[in-house]
Length: 296
Length: 341
Image (cartoon, rainbow over all chains, first blue to last red; front, side, top):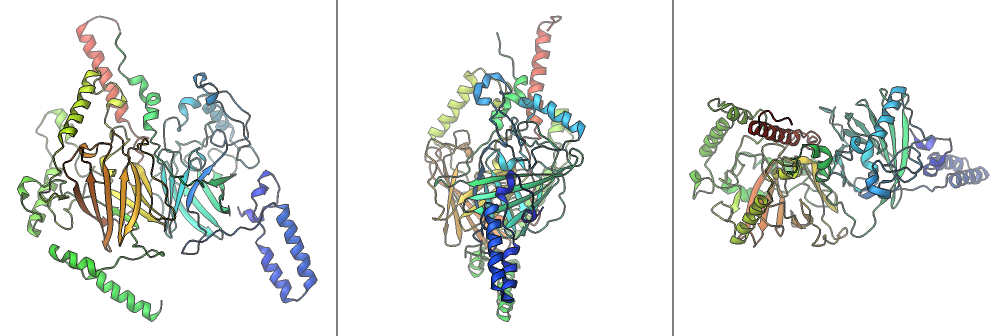
């Protein structure tokens, strides 16, 4: 999924990067000394850039010359409620009042709809009905990928040459992105097995060996253990990070599909990952029925 | 690589490998001076990698080594052999319950098979007697008050999940820290560095600390009223040593009887290619009459670290609580036979 080659326009087009070919074409034109053509091409490029509503951004570099992704980032929006476009909805349980209501949102799925296989669509509907007790987030379980990225809590990237650490505030989740392929994972896990590489300005992460226990959101969107996620992290400004992911899971979806969203740098001076050990907050839900009955 | 680079590498390699050839313990401080840690691009010592603190050296000095700071090589070999036998011995002489309790041997555990490379007789290096200073009266009173409050609450140890220990609930494991101390398994910490941050990831319950280490990224410490199980860490470099100071612990953290006012200072120094010297000092006047210090030479683990999804796979709490409810039911049935429930 080379985003610079994508031509269709939808609401995601605001994230499109400029065509990388412009400077090279210009240089060739200059060699031929056809000034008029060069001017014309410049105009075309400019028009393209304006049309795509973005300017080329070259991220600051780390010591080894790679785009610097270090920092505390956070998604703002409603993706964790439902990654598909959705209207506002009543809370799963009434006692939370309006606090537990789902805010409306445009979602992050390209094209708007997740291409579920028929049986999987039925399971998703069932998940939604029982989301208050089935959602792994309610149980304080590790969020998996890609959900970890857009939990309503910050994440921190710690970027070294051979290792990029992703630390998430939610549940103290963490994963290592290996920039030197260590070979296949020994077993499936909640946060999967991440192998990264650089494609120009973009960090591409291949995530495999994810188990089938995590969800995409609070709306019950789910996957099987055949899930394969290819993530792309691209700086689009000093404080913006474009996050894209291709989702493949032939047991659950009829075709691969994509999500795309912005992450924002937490610029506050005191921004930091704090401790969110949520096990305690999940114990009543998980074990409440096993408590000693209160004597009468 | 240039010729100069090759020569430099050869010289560095010679220096690096020289101390590896069985240098006596007493000469180690000299060897440490000769060796220079590799550098990150910004010129700091490179501490990155996965380090293991698995060791069978006890935290406190056992009676058999009283007055003795180091084991001889022979003593170390004998000690290792004896402990491994004790840990692995197939004991079937007790009751059925005891038999189950002893079923875990080193096939299940990963507590290491070696004493620390310095052959110290205890991980505690200060006070010199190798013992953690006794708890102050205040700390003893605190512990007694807590026990009394538990008794007076009328709650039993199996009434609900919050009556179980933090480790069983997968909230905190002593070995993962903060600070780190060898435990039964997962004695690994991964270090990842940037110019402004050092991440310390404990394998035990995937606990990550991203510690700010530079003035550029300095952020104010947490306010005193915000308490965290693993505290609030700030770092800085003192020469080639990474120093991490942690405060703001909770009153439930209770490291070795400490209070929430514990001030922990950890020091990480790479003293050889394969050794990261880890020292920590506990200061808490309300709990210990004097500060005390632990030293663990961590060794480079060339294997990878894997996800420890403790809470996600926790069947202990459900098992323990269900067992307790079943026992209560059986006991109630015995008291009132024939009563429908």
